[in-house]
Image (cartoon, rainbow, N blue to C red; front, side):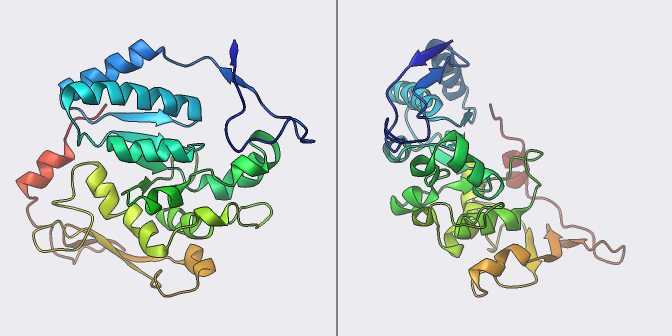
Length: 269
């Protein structure tokens, strides 16, 4: 079953040689069930994390979070996962409601050409994973790799946000949605820590935080953007101890802060 709908903003016109999709499949969950889950999350102080890829699913989440927020208050850091086809008005609604968009930015690399040619058409495909709209609004967005759908490679996440180069054609898909290297780094470090209420112990190198960081082969802020994808991890340090490359001679990790442990086992839904 599919419900008729008008083509969303940015869709090819009816006279376009590429057919325009004007149907929407039935929602996975009815609105009342989604609202009940969001309300339950807020009532129990759970972190609500919702998989919303299409704009219809995003509309549903926004509607339910708006209703639940009126009842329970804000700063829940509700997280919208993927947000692949988020419209600009929806990104603005994320900002208003305090929802953190977590973009699957590597989609531009792996399937960008396919989206442009067959799924969305060229006008909508340029805005998949619209991180720039979030940056322009001062939002602390995050980005992820969605393993095993894509390989768990944080350097690839970084590169895909900065260049938006596609795998097949090597073209730039939506240059207006590219972000700076620093914004991309923040999306997988301090912003990611904040998403999970862990910014007091993780996400940046500061006194009092866990010493979790990596040493890279090159500085992503200074090398040419097209070479970011070639950066490698030279060393990984966890709680002050080198865990990669492994060596039995390195010191044992320091005791984990109780605050960090509490954050690590926070409830999510």
